[in-house]
Length: 254
Image (cartoon, rainbow, N blue to C red):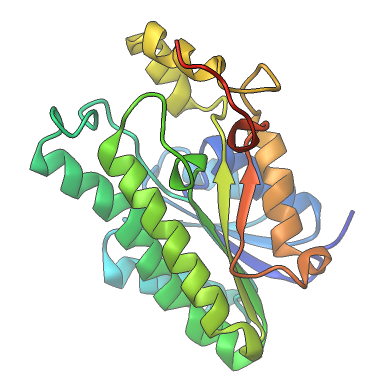
């Protein structure tokens, strides 16, 4: 497939998990990919693999985020797709009764403020072009309560969903689509770390998934590629659920 032929896509958190799978999928569909990540060891290798460009970026730093998108425009001529995907889910983000203010603020900065900064940086280029697709990574927990609480993570993803919806409405008639990707649990290093540190807590997530398994990163990347392409030209301000049926099911908690 070449649905993204000739387009320039910026991906944050592009060195692992959903981000890495999407970098590869975008490249396979013809896009030139600018990979943004803090991983300076892995980043150049990932970019070389897909014939793209790596930019070291702390997504909580406005100047670094601005430069990430400026590199895409300066070196490749446009910013057609922004997949704002970088995020964290640290173990000290737990029940509201246990989560300290430092953990709360750290997760909000990386998961929500970074998406604000990336949208703010990408939009002027897309508005100038009169077209573009922004995909922001939210979560199924943005639309329903989680079986295992991560209070700041859940709140941050709810914020991503609300912001994406508002931007999608605001800029629809100017040719820019903005959607929130809402994955269910995905077999990524973050989830594997949770399994290793707290298998019982992680296993509780499995019982709620009608398909009976976690998603693979490639499956989520396919959804991102759809939202990036013209196949989704009438989709904006959407909560795009890719959750194995979780949000449509009733399962009695353990």
